[in-house]
Image (cartoon, rainbow, N blue to C red; front, top):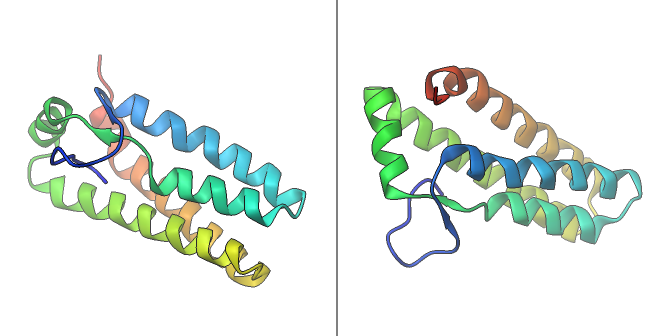
Length: 124
């Protein structure tokens, strides 16, 4: 979720803070996967899906930088969210092939977003 309409979870001020929590969750998810701790995988995948929202002032900054690429940025965020939800569901069902498939989708989505937008959005 990129923005918050006032009825949402945690809100943070900057994009960097939003991306740090999923980074930690991804590392924890990997550890859970190695231990075959499927509830842990599900918990961390849901944590990624539920990452804090970007504050409206930061959304305005991002929009000013990205312009017409803002739609692609929003879509990338939704894709990562949806992949994380599917991963959590697969882990909840102990479906290892689906866990691996959705983890690969999640990782690909994160990397694609970083490659597509990170350099432009880094603050001086």
